[in-house]
Image 1 (cartoon, helix red, strand yellow):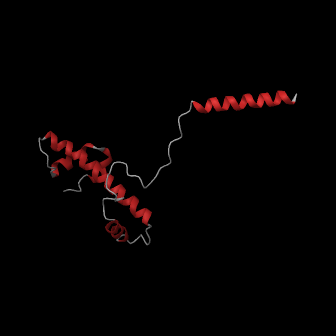
Image 2 (cartoon, rainbow, N blue to C red):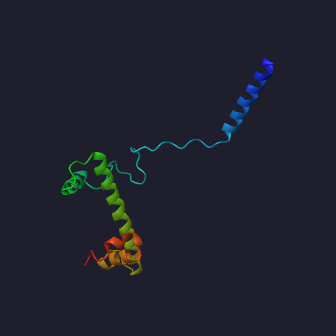
Image 3 (cartoon, helix red, strand yellow):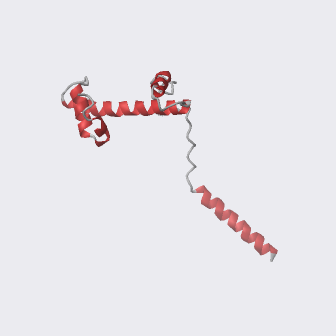
Length: 122
């Protein structure tokens, strides 16, 4: 009887090992030290001291952690990158390489995400 239990346990272990062999390896955890697309060693392209000064200019903000300032800087970078790429599409349609105000206006009008900017360049 005990040998039956041991045999069953051994079979279960073999099945578990076989199932584990077909699985893909677990994804690596997120590392903030690795850079995804930028080859520079700077974590942010915007100067964090300037971003922090802008945050502190808001009278409702009393303290801002380094992490919060970094996240705001990164969000600003991504925002500028997105709107610049969209505006550059309109510059290319006009057979130009230089962005102009009208390119930004067209990008703002075309994208719903930029609706809050409508009229800000006037």
